[in-house]
Image (cartoon, rainbow, N blue to C red; front, side, top):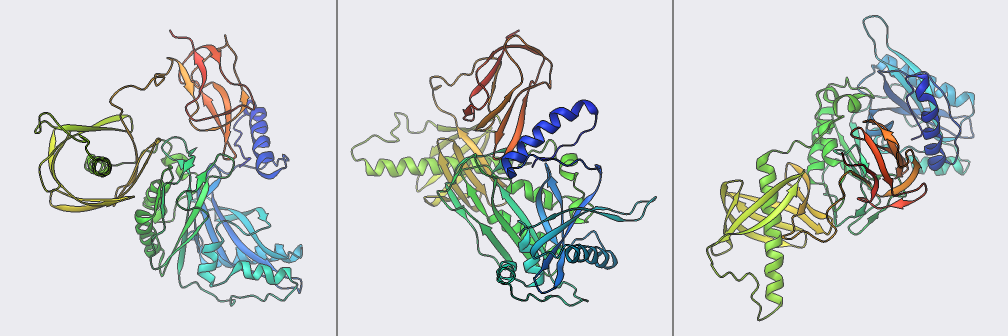
Length: 497
């Protein structure tokens, strides 16, 4: 937060203003530093510790190069990017810094690392010291078998905290941490707010969770988007990656959009697997990210949503006696249930046969389906002789389904009739998320070109500029600075051509 790249003098003023606003909101201090920019580099840091008795040491390194918008997304220890000689040199530099300033308690010395090229050797550059416990401290605890919080308390009490690692220490496990964030990776990482309708952390060997949410938790716009951390520990890096992928497949957050499936794509990227990734990988390779679900998985999710809806209506009919719930004048005529996913309509035509068996047709393809069970957030059925189970939750905001292997899906039920007020004025720009209007950049009558900023919004301590997607003239601006708006609010209207 509070960081911007400036590629030309023309960009400087707006970048300084935006960075200062974010820094003041996040840290209460708008002071800025100007530093040299490395277009391709890695972020490697060392966990340091000091006490008031002259003990200064480090507890291994962490690789934090998988970032988006300068925020860490995946962290691991040890770093796959440095050899033992570099690890020793960088560790000694970090400890020398701690000793020079008589540093007390836990801290992190961060370095920019430039890998070796044909024309230059590998080099590292001091970046900053974070004088606190980092979000990614669990990977250090798992690799070094320490409790950093306990060590902090001992140091704060003035007790001796001696080095915990031998000089020739070599880690015997590899730890990876994934940050679970309430954000939409398919929509420029816009924050996602709302109520968590269902939350589950499956118990697995080698998996640790650090979280602050549960089923029913409200995710507002006022805080950082991170809601949990998943940590995987295995004997090898490859084993830790595979273990994390399995954990994310089974970890469930329904009711809001998260980056869980995006993390799975990052973990499977060839550059992450071989360790060659840098801080620009997401910007470079995932700028137009879309979840690559195939038609088979989408159809299976649609069947799960239909059966969940059908079962809920059936249960309601059993509670209300003497009703005609589900009655059809022509029994054999198919009924239908319609959804929308990624802007596309999915119509599920179905006919109930007998004994919880259906004939279901989607996009012209028919499937034999047998309903086998359900509870509040669970549905199971047999589709084409394959038994399948799904986690599911619904609200006015959509239908949230977790596929057993293809990830999480957010769909919308298509109403039979258009709701009053549902139509949006042509040429209207709407808020992609709830948040505060920080700055209005245009007024009625202004001529704008495609890409021109219309206004700046802030949500979850991050600023987002709403840009014109075509040339035109501003007809009306509906908001002012410091207004708070909900997602979907019309902000600016352009004149119709």
